Length: 126
Image (cartoon, rainbow, N blue to C red; front, side):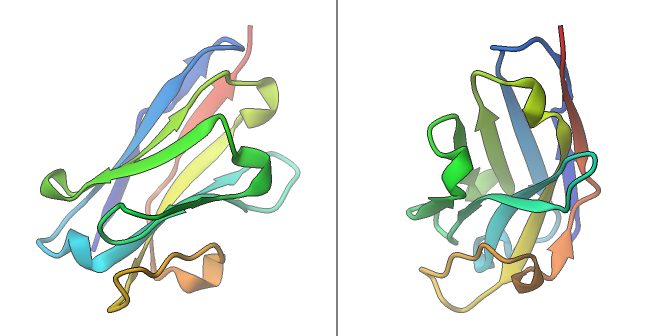
């Protein structure tokens, strides 16, 4: 599967963005999906994950409350809604996909994912 992330940009503190990740292929519903981010000076970190049918989500503790992951399997797309953006949210955001036969499977480790998008840059600044 190929992943194409989009939706990043420059936003003022307190604003919102919705990132999208479009997947190629016809079996998107066979993949658990995740979002990660790479902040300058830090290692890439887990943001959120969602299972195959979107019924289960999981967030990094520091991301709870302002980040919402969702998916639309009919559109082969996973989303990340970010509200109340802060300068420290500035990062390149990556989507990732893991094929799994476990319908309830949800994954937070980078090594769990096989496919990665190219990333979309979010810059939070006034």
